[in-house]
Image 1 (spheres, one colour):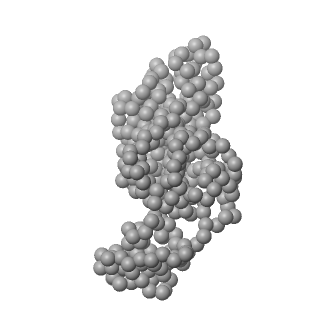
Image 2 (cartoon, rainbow, N blue to C red):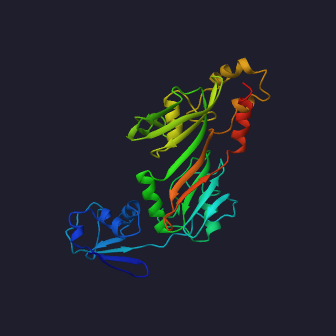
Image 3 (cartoon, rainbow, N blue to C red):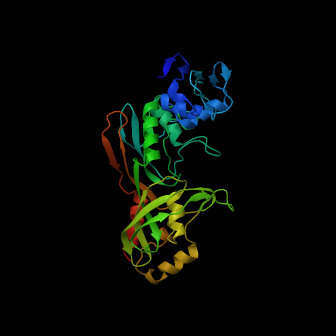
Length: 331
């Protein structure tokens, strides 16, 4: 049995017999509302004590009977700062927010992006009511979208909601469905891409199949529309959530996303594809010079952390991708 008490800025636990031989970080994840990553971060910051001594490593094994103390530092207020940036809120309650992120918006602050991010906007909108599990730079952020990917995201306003949604993300019950416009028509028209993804050895900005530290990555795709044999609208459903997963996977089977600056088709290849149809296209430049990867997070579904109701949300295709498809319909 776990005995625990909460002081103003500390959590205290006395480890019961069930904690025998468990790692400290795993044990604390089970008895607190903190994620394992957050607990490991607190260990690194010297904020966790075991029997009055600073815990040196999160992997230390427990014997039972230990007294664990977690001191919770206040969230730093220096960065990021709240900014009054408009957000398209699809749904909001006391536990979470579902929003439709615009293409071009960075999710959280980082190198070269300290202002104008989704986090800056959320801090203003929520006025302090965001989960702190993600730390200073990522309050409330359960998952992310690339800067130039549009569509649905869920954000946690409480630690309980954050833990619940993160667990659903980990066990794959939080479902995400995307639409992508790609060069060519994938064959077969419906399939599964099962290729591990890791960091590219030649370009630190890129990911690649079987790259450094590659982890399991699975994407299910289905062709929704095809435009001759030149382009297609593809639905992609993620089973895992690796960085750039859809972009890397579609490129790996030779059907790269239109407009993708890292993994997309070369402009010469695009020109040769649309050349036979140039008289039919009012504005072929919208295809040749599409300004971002043609990728939109259309649908998200999850179990509400409080009500336990299944929540399903859809976001309409953005105007730029809609116009791109209209021009392709003339092929």
